[in-house]
Length: 270
Ligand code: C5P
Image 1 (tube, helix red, strand yellow):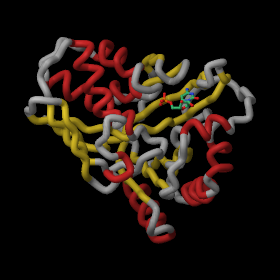
Image 2 (cartoon, protein in one colour; image 1 turned 30 degrees about the horizontal axis):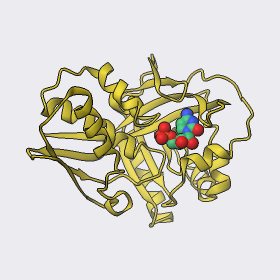
Image 3 (cartoon, protein in one colour; image 1 turned 120 degrees about the horizontal axis):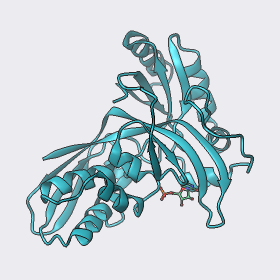
Image 4 (cartoon, helix red, strand yellow; image 1 turned 60 degrees about the vertical axis):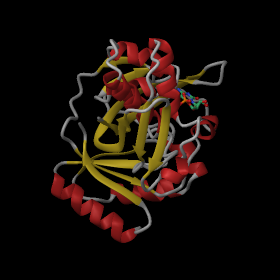
């Protein structure tokens, strides 16, 4: 049995306020790519995890891996005594603003709910997900959805991005989410309307930590056929949406030629 941990992008992300507990009140439009990490499960006596793939070393298979935390939280909530041998193929960069651990945790919840035959609908899984991280409920849903509060209060969006060709590029600089939020200037630049009219208020704080983000946004913005160019989450991954797949593929080739060490993913939104 297998699930994909779909890569997340924030089509827009507005930071509205800093709460006394240090978290930020945000308004965001989440969308999800057709590609992501792959998570498989097989019978076992206990809950165990192995990890391989290009970014395996960056996450490890220890108890702090969100896949294990998600599995244990689900088992505890539903009184599960069965085990599960989980195997994660980590192909998305880590600390990159595209879901990473959050998408893996959400995939674990969806996968184990099926594997253990649990009576757990999406809402139940989102409840458990919220305890694992602000982005995890959206990753459980893995469809275009609006997130308020910490990004964890979800409402349906009538924006349709399904099938949009998208190019994700990461300059291979890990960026810490708390560090980026800590550099937000405290200025509320207004509510989120549509993705097109929106912004990512974390771009400027992320650029001050990782100047590569600015170079990357300029390179993406110079490509023909783009409809939206922005940073995702707290970075450093940036993305461009395109009018069609040939335009996306031409941009991917141009980026790979200009910056052969950067990570790229040419995919579509689901
Ligand atoms: O919830 P999660 O563990 O993914 O968040 C990681 C960190 O990102 C938090 O500890 C916090 O510093 C920051 N964060 C925030 N406001 C949000 C979401 C995350 O300040 N809405």
